Length: 461
Image (cartoon, rainbow, N blue to C red; front, side):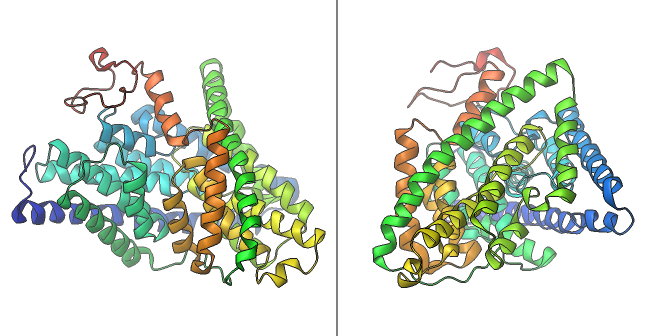
């Protein structure tokens, strides 16, 4: 399958077949990734059976610190581009500005991601699985000799499979390609069907390996239409939080880079020890947050506790990401949003008792809607955010409130000058590599084959 191919039935079938292979490979790596992390994340409980008091705090701190430093060392030594989410790398590669060296990225993202996320850092699984999915797709592309625009399309399909198997959310994975890579993805019937095929295969294979486990099913009821202004107000608030979250991530990355130049590995060690200690002292403030969301929904704490938890998770999320290990931001965003949404709903109950009941909702409804709104404010992909949250929680009755909140979040984030987090991360990476992104509409042909360090790849805005 060399270069541009006529969109015939044979080419369509062959591309979909290769996309299925890419999805299967992604599902294998993603399923094993989840299975190992779920097994390892119980290590603090095991340690608590043998140690107590300050010895337990110190031991957990040292374990997470060692795992964090190991993950950072593996990443920097063998595949520096495997650090962080991986989504900007995938988008840059589809656009022809970056190169995914899959023989290096795949093992490093897998092993270092397990060490980082399994140790308790506030990171999501979806970043590594998206990056591994793109890498697996390129492995399939090399195997079947796929190049040109089909290779870029296959990369996007693999990334979609990675998101699908991270959250068991295949439809939001398809939308992720449509909305997040809309400028780079080479659309045709066969490439679009390839995304469907990869997401289907990735989700199926992951379920076969790690079983079907709903991310966070939450029972909700349909909200009255008169409640929509409250959800829009929540969305506006989260628009501010989303912009602040993005600024915090980028500034902390710059701070970590400065510390790294002066004292290598000091910042990852400090972050790792602090997170490990918090696993004992305040466990709800750390880890990706999947279990935290379920606990908060089942037993919602007081308003003051929710506000403190939101502030703590904002800090630990930003710090964990800045450490430089593989890890995503989707899950931390969803958990942070749940804290803020529950706090918002609880505050309404305190100010006007009985109001929420008359509207047919509870603070939990605001917690669910907040997930989509904060995701929208940070990533600026509202359709992905809404469908992702509905697939994760099963809260289809809150579709209209999510639309209202995401509208408010998008408008406020835009008016504040906020920009999509992955777009800013990619620009930061390109600036560090002394590569400027292309101007709107500028040709990109031939860039994918040029190594990132080649000065000839430098382009003007």
